[in-house]
Length: 196
Length: 202
Image 1 (cartoon, chains in turn blue, yellow):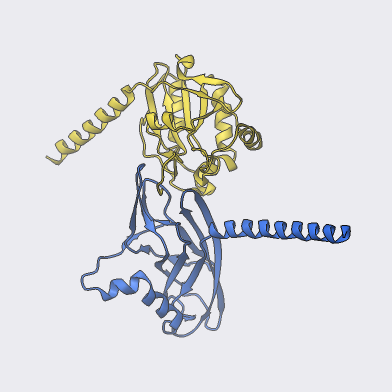
Image 2 (spheres, rainbow over the protein chains, first blue to last red):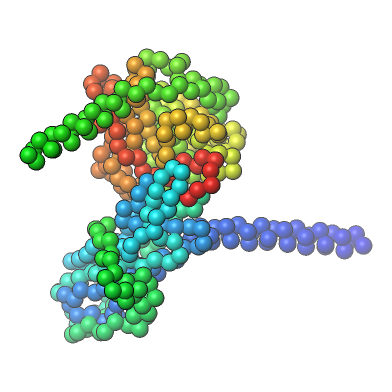
């Protein structure tokens, strides 16, 4: 009986321990807004301009910031590297939402948001060469508190005589984002644009 | 014509800046993490830095994780400046800690302010119009606010941005120590919102 009680106590302790562990990881998971990086084509010719995108997915109650974030927060920073001579163009920001509080106003995005840009590859690349490009990502998410998010994502491209058409994944990304809705609407506003 | 408009705008800006510089620093008395009490009037005639803080705000951490804030606190308090860190986080909000936890955090951060003051009700923060963490107010020897705003011109929580930043706070303190006017009296602060007792987003 005593042994059974002891076993029960140990099991209960384990349950409490794992429940606490689960709660801890769940809490941390809520503070993380996963980032995905997309490139329009898998194969690119030397010197080509390649559309690229970053998608942030925010948990409910959290938001991130626009290029002009207003009274709080900061604009995201996405920087590409990987080959010498790589050129990055302005990031485009979809029209932002307004977040109002007693203390001030901020501008940004909740739910999921896609940022668009282009990179230009050097024309010195060799046909058949495989290159790995890395995007260093830094963005702020806030709810009733703020958490700085940092990540790094790599993509591998094959250098070819001509660039391949946009992938179905790319088309789907654009179609389902604010950019797809902007293109559909007549007279839709231009995206906010700037250098990060 | 454009030249006159530009002058008028500049004049207006300077007037506003001067008006701001003339504003008397609101009086306050607050408890510190070590149980002592600190009132602004007890530092009459001194240069006082009021640093609104929240140790868990990423923008505040940018300055503490790299040791920059601690270095400035140490440097300027050794030169007679009073440095009061003030936390206006309400109970249950980010950055609000018990006195014991504050003591542990201050030791861990190796911070060197004159004191860390607790403004749980947010009354002092609101009297100063503190909106962000970090947000800095500098009180001159005559008791007037001579600087308020951001620490620097790099609106980011990335510690890499510390290098090469224009530091408004240090410029103000160095000028005051030399008896010179503060070159820039007001800038737009950046950072987290102060975690007052209200239901709002940032």
